Length: 144
Ligand code: THU
Image (tube, rainbow, N blue to C red; front, side, top):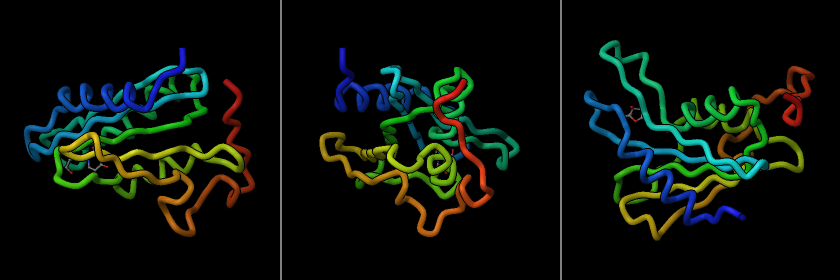
């Protein structure tokens, strides 16, 4: 059965509750859908050594990719902010890695009121982004 945007949003909200963020108290949840119709989730995972904090989006993307699932179609990021917040720079670069010609990622940001999402295209989250093509590399998203 096809997974709806609302289901994906609900998964991001649940993931946000699992955030490990005792330092910032800023909860972030992420869910993503792959072309195989599978959902992967992530939350931010902080550390007493602050620089080791990992964002929710990169946790979810690494979970999918490490399962051999590289074709991401949609990614939802959820925070408790008044207005929806889009991914940080590092996560944007990670998202763009998995966008290629003809296969973009729909980015959905949700804040406190999850019924009012904001949307972006993965390929547009960084202007003049540095991408695999710049290194003459085929990202091989279809392969395992
Ligand atoms: N954070 C994310 O999980 N995703 C983002 O895109 C922005 C920031 C986390 C990192 C840190 O645990 C907390 O939010 C505050 O920066």
